[in-house]
Length: 107
Length: 178
Image (cartoon, rainbow over all chains, first blue to last red; front, side, top):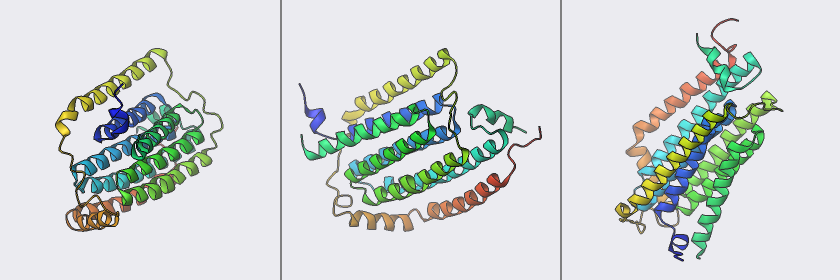
C-alpha cells in the first residue's frame, strides 16, 4: 500500500479538494429551488476558487493570488448583498422564495 | 503521518462534509450554519497555506458579515417549511447529478494528469514563508502599488452595490402590476 499520497500533502491535494467543493456548490445551484440556498451554493463555489488561488500562490511563491482572493471576496460579499435584496423583493411580492417566481420579474 | 498531513485531512473532511450538508439540508437555517462551518474550515486551510491575513479576512467577512446577512434574511422570511426543496422531475435530476459527476471526474482527472507539469514547487520562497508578518506586509505593498487601480475600482463597486441594494430592498418588487 502506497501511503505517500496520505502523508505528503502537495498542491494536488488542495486542488482536488477545491474542485470537489466547487462541484458541490454547482450541484446545489442545479438541484435546489430556494433562492437563499442557491446564493449559499454560489458562495461555496467562490470559496473553492479562493482556495485554488491561495494554493497556487503558496506553491509558486507569488503573492498575486492573495490579491485576487481579496477582490473575489469583496465581489462575493457585494453579490450576496444584491442577491439577498432581490430575494427580499421577491418575497414581499409572492410570500415565497422559490426560484420559479423569478420569471415574474420580466417586464 | 505527520501533523501537517493529519491537519489537512481533518480540515478537508470537515469542509467537504459541511459543504455537502449545505446542499442536502432542507431547512435553510441549517444550510446557513453548515455554510458557516465550511467557511471556518476554509479559513483554517488558508492558515495551513501560510495565508494568515487572508484567513483572518475570510473569518471576518464570510463567517461574520455574509453569514449574518444570510441568517437575518432567513429570519425575516420565516421559512418554517421549505416545500419542494429540490427540483422536480426524476429524469432531469438524474441528468443534473450525472453532469455534476462528469464535471467532477473531468476536473479531478485533469488535475491528476497535470501533476507532472507542476513540479517547480518553490515552497521555500522568502516572501511566503516566515512569521506571517512579512507576507502581510508584502501583501499591503503590492495592493497599494501594483493593484491600486483595482482597489479603487472595488471602492466604487461597493458604493454602487450599497446604493443598489437599498434601492432594490425599498422597491415594491416586480416590474409590472398584477
